[in-house]
Length: 112
Length: 112
Image (cartoon, rainbow over all chains, first blue to last red; front, top):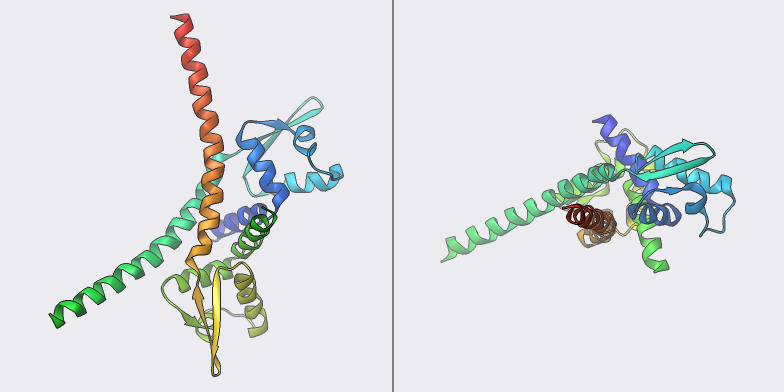
């Protein structure tokens, strides 16, 4: 549970930045090298590498070095943790809405 | 677009903490006062208030003061921004999988 919570921390942290979300969008279309990924950004390479490491820490991407080229690949499975969290959250408030509906219906029936 | 991106930044930032996610879970079941929300946490009130403000900045909750009591309510609509972002992301890589399938099928058909 603590591990799951820590995972969510690092995932949401990784998603909380426009550069990192743009990188994920690009990687959604297929693997790419660090230099190709960095190209559209007006940013020094060390700053860009911090974003890459943050995405790696969140488990949202993998990187692999071959020769002088480091290639990044998206880890689509990790997004399931966010989707699970969101659907749990939604289940809580939809459960509440259902209970409210039952209450209102029961009240209306008693009145009828 | 810049506004939407800033919104996602503040939402994901707000979600990147276990205390804040626990508060959202509690508020999913219905509105609650700050003191009720703070009760389960071993945390000074000013620190807890920082979490509440972070959730407010992300638009995930509203707060309203009546007399001496400040009540928090979840803003379920704001979660749609995260769900939209996730489904856009998923559409990118599912599009890629479809294109890959078409490519493999076309290749197999040419061979047959």
